[in-house]
Each structure stands twice: as structure tokens, then as C-alpha cells.
Length: 182
Image (cartoon, rainbow, N blue to C red; front, side):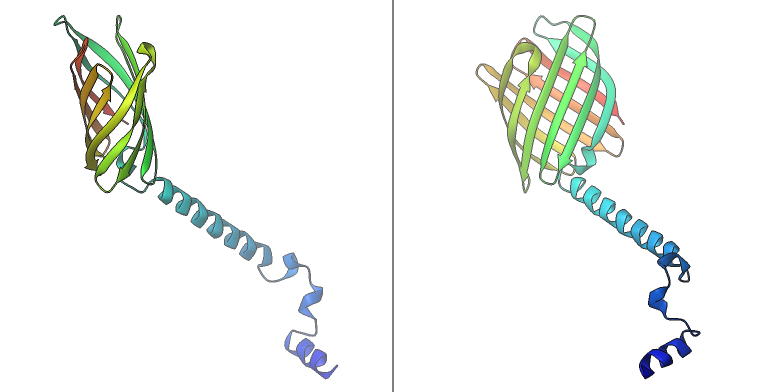
């Protein structure tokens, strides 16, 4: 009982445990600040995990245009959109390009092991799919997309909010030069 009296004397005659949290000096404010700091740290940590790795500079939505070259020698202007979703050493990618007469819809799932890149790709409008192999890092990659009767060299160069995609193939689709920004 003496310790309770001593505690009350130090605490202004009142036992702190009997006060609701909002009545304590700055209780809710401290609780709110602590919750905000904790939430911000958790979000930053999850974003840094999602945005780290060799594909991080490419993250997000991109758009732009360029040209596509066909085996008959014709060339057309195209409009393009891309979405890159990197998670650590892996990335999902969707690249859709179209002109008045031509369209391709390329998707890929890739994985980096150091500077080695492997993965799979598919092109929906032609129902073709295959494998990817190459090298790179930091948003700059050179890969070969292969399938039965099809090979294409693809170079992606990312610098800040600008990106170029160059494709060279040995089929009806001869190549594309694309510049995008986000």
C-alpha cells in the first residue's frame, strides 16, 4: 500500500492505470504517430522489395511508338504500350503494339540469375510461344526469343524515364524500333 501512495504522490495523486489512453498526455497522438511511422516503414519495405533487382528500372507503365518492318520490305508506324512488373529477380512483361494494319501482343515471364536472363514468351495474336535467353541488368538487356521456326534478337535499353526496344527477326516480322517513356 505504501508503494501505491508513493506512486500517487509522484503522479499528482492519481494512479495512471485508471486514466483512459486519450486522457494521458498525448496518448492518441503518440499512438497515431507510431501507427503512421510503422505503416510507412512497412509500405517502403514492401515497395523496395518489389522494386529491387535487375528489372527495377523498368517497373511501371510505358507508352510510345516506332516502326515495324515486314519481310516484303514495307514499314509501318506503330503505337505501343508496355507494362513491366518486377518482383526481385523476376519480371512479368506485356508489350502491345499496333498500327492500322498490324498488331502484336507480346508477353513474357523472365528470371535473372546474376546477369543471365531466362524465361518464356508468347505472342497472343499469332498463337506462338517459346523461350528467352540472354544477358543484362539494370534495365538494359539483350535476349534471344526462340520458337519453332522463329528467332528474334531483342535489345531493351532503359535510362530514367526513357526506353528503347529494338527487335530483329528472321520471319515475316523482320523487326521493330520502339521508343517509349513513362
